Image (tube, rainbow, N blue to C red; front, side, top):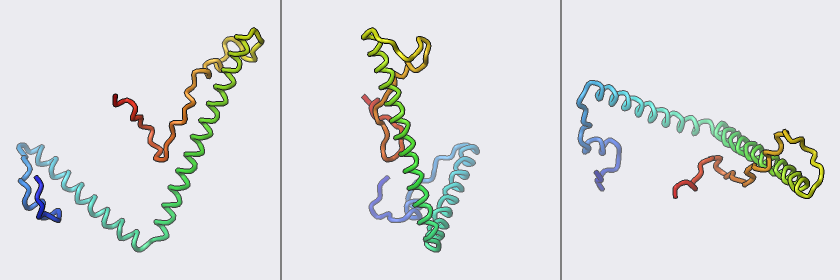
Length: 136
């Protein structure tokens, strides 16, 4: 339901129909959810008050997370560069073998599998590893 004259949560609760609670289990579940909602609201209020009284903690936390993001970006970049190096070495050894040369890898060496490594840089700023390509 959309009411254009409702501006607060309490007004919305006043005009909304009561939840359809048929069983004791429904009522228990609803009461638990309401308690969690109250705790979440109180937590948000307390955190806002804390941020107001302790701005140095906010600054420290923001710097901490910026540093963590940078470290993660550097780690991913190093892994990507290592995969590219390993793949290039494996492909160069394949080319040497194809041209009749002698390879530095043994026939049972696991480094042969490096030629199949994915070296596309799929990192993003958010750090999410979600692939949006599978929605076709």
